[in-house]
Structure formats: structure tokens, C-alpha cells
Amino acid sequence: MSLQQDVELMRNIPLFAKIEPSKLKLLAFTAERLTFGQGDLVCKQGDEGDSAYIIIDGEADVIVDTANGEVTVATLKKNDFLGETAILCDVPRTATVKAKSDLETLMISKDLFFQLVGQFPSMSIEIMRELARRVERTTVQLREAVSQQA
Amino acid sequence: MSLQQDVELMRNIPLFAKIEPSKLKLLAFTAERLTFGQGDLVCKQGDEGDSAYIIIDGEADVIVDTANGEVTVATLKKNDFLGETAILCDVPRTATVKAKSDLETLMISKDLFFQLVGQFPSMSIEIMRELARRVERTTVQLREAVSQQA
Image (cartoon, rainbow over all chains, first blue to last red; front, side, top):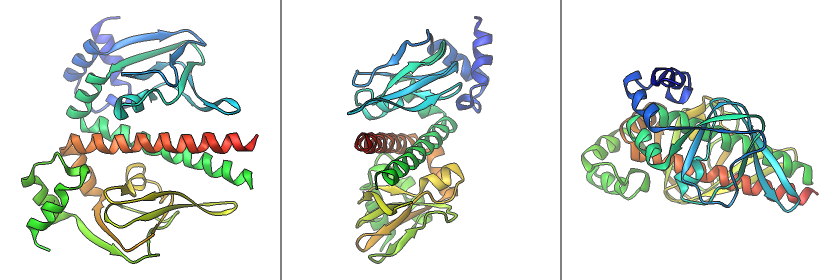
């Protein structure tokens, strides 16, 4: 795929929507495209991790180990990001992410991630917004789980 | 309290630690200090909200309504922030926050919040980091609740 096509692709990712095209070129040079087959693991709970991923195409399940086996806590789709917790918090992967279909991703290294959020406040705001939504969604699931216990 | 004292106070809040003192003066002018007595509500689940808060002193419980009544899902303490979800996601307050002790806060309006994260990437990173931790913490609680169901 040409650089121009890569830039076009990135312009359509909401996380990068407000970044000028000239700066997207640098991102297109630096970020790596990685594809996974259905059933492949993007990352594994407990492993070290120094990259985040943006889904360009396909779906992936977020799976956590529990005392009762694996539980799928979310399904990620096009334009969703994943893997940010390990690089933000310097902790091992907090969940396993498995390709639910063939999956195309953009891999963002830890260094690039911090460069991007340092340069592009609009990207930081989108990430904060999505993280706040995830806190809320998980809190709702927790509320329901607690309600069912009583 | 003098402006200089306010700036000193803000320098000791980790969220603002990397912001230059000259810029903290502007923040000290713009942010409002609000105190609450024990048992007072800082915000109420379901209400509209257009401010976030940083706790300067004291503790506050984060409470959500469930089918079985109120559940305290977290306790916030000095330097923690709250209320960011309503302003990031344009949704009503997702939880009630009640002062567990006398509580001193710095109130940050929605406008000021977006100004700050636009200007200070270090602040954005700290907020993302804390939100990622909250996703993780809530996921662990959810995992435990699901395990107890079986």
C-alpha cells in the first residue's frame, strides 16, 4: 500500500481525525501494520507489553481469566484501540485479546504513543473519552453482577 | 489564602506537577475552591454536570445505585480527581460522590478542563493513566463478582 493510501486510511480513524495530513505522513511512516488470523492472540494476559493497537478491520474479543475460566468482557471493532493500559501504567497485559475474525491493526509503540499524545491534544481527549466510557461500561456490568448476587 | 499559597498548593498536586509555576498562576485564578461537610454530596448520579473536581483534603465515597440499593464502589482521597466522565462524555453523572469526611476540592469547569488538557500533555497523560487504572480496577472487581456467581 502506498504512503498516500496509508495517510488516507489514517484520516478515517477517528482518533487521528483532527491531525493535519502532513503530520499523518510521519505517523504512517512510523506505525506498523500487523494482521492476525482468526483465533490469533494480539496479546496475552500477564505478558509484558510495550505496544498499543488500533483496529483497522475485523473484530477482537477481550478475555479475562477468572476462577471459573475465561470470560469475554468486551468485543472490539474497527477504530477501537487496545493495549494502552500496559504502556500507560507499566503493568503486564491486563487481559487477553483474541482475533474474532481476520484482524488488521496499526501497532503503536510506547515511544510513538507518548510522542503522539504529547503533540496532539485532540488524540489525548479521544483516548480519555474512550477510557471514561470503559470505566462507565465496566461499572454498569459490575453493578449488574452485584445485583445478581443478592 | 494568597495566590502564592494557592500556587504552592497546586504544585503539590501530582496532576499539575509538571506545569510551570507561571502557568499555575492562571490556573489558581481560574479554578474554584469548594469545601463540603461530611455527608454532603459533591455530585448525584443522574444529574447534569459540567465540572470535575480534584480532592485537596479529605475523602469521598463513590456510590452507585443498584437493584439492591446503594453500593460504594470506590473511596477517593487527596489528589484523586472525579467528575471527569460527565464532562468528557457529555452524559449525566454516572455515580454519586459523597464526602466521607470534611472535604476540600478544586473545582475545574468543563471549559477550563479542555483548556488544560489542550495545553499540558503531561496532565493528559496523568488523567489517561488514572482512567486506565480505574478500568483495570473495575475489571478486577467484575471478575471477582462473576466468579462468586458460579
